[in-house]
Image 1 (cartoon, rainbow, N blue to C red):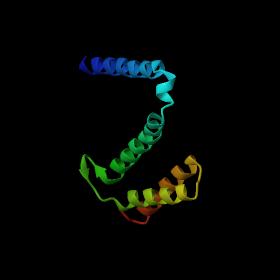
Image 2: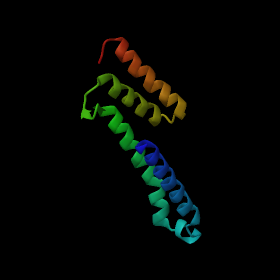
Image 3: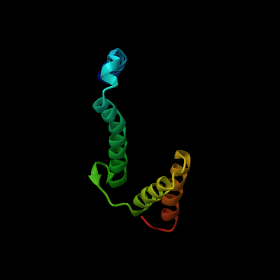
Image 4: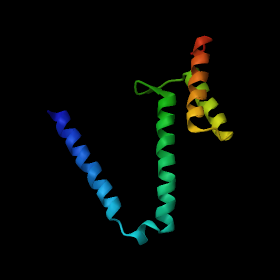
Length: 104
């Protein structure tokens, strides 16, 4: 029951946040600082998620060379401006290849 309450509260919160964003005045959204914030926050959040997934396991720091190799391969693919799907495939293939070679 507590899980359903948490899901409903989270859903209501997300709906309220979306509604607040749609109700914001246009001049506020056009402000350069707000635009810069909106452009950089998703990048920072995604980077944090990638970093956490790359260097932690079960809530503790873990050094996994195959995972870090996949991350490095993805970074190289991004430098060459590969499409997102290609970046994912390169990262997964690199990590899988490293694990197949016994690097873990």
